[in-house]
Image 1 (cartoon, rainbow, N blue to C red):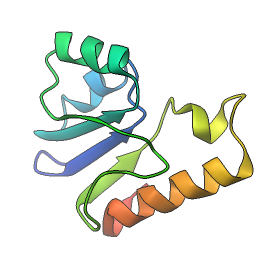
Image 2 (cartoon, rainbow, N blue to C red; image 1 turned 180 degrees about the vertical axis):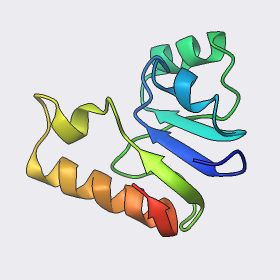
Image 3 (cartoon, rainbow, N blue to C red; image 1 turned 180 degrees about the horizontal axis):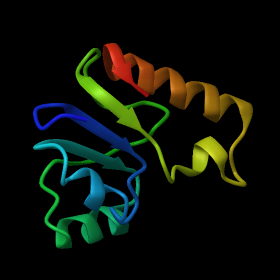
Image 4 (spheres, one colour; image 1 turned 90 degrees about the horizontal axis):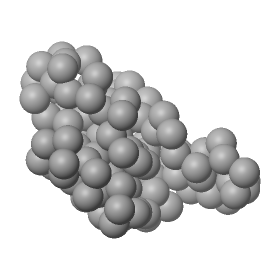
Length: 102
């Protein structure tokens, strides 16, 4: 991750892991479906917050140099299913630029 890299955290939750990512890039974007989690991220001074669902990311294609989902329930949580995993990964790939890190 470089300072100028555009990075997207899908399912950022409280922003715990994003506090680390924020040290390495000036262009961190965080998305979460929960209003409460977005509020906590705002309290942690995150500026590029997006409320949305990982199954249908409300973003244009081919934007980010790095896309990750460290604590996203639809990837590995109890409520995850095959559809949610495949759809979320598809969406992450869609918004990532060619050669991006996933």
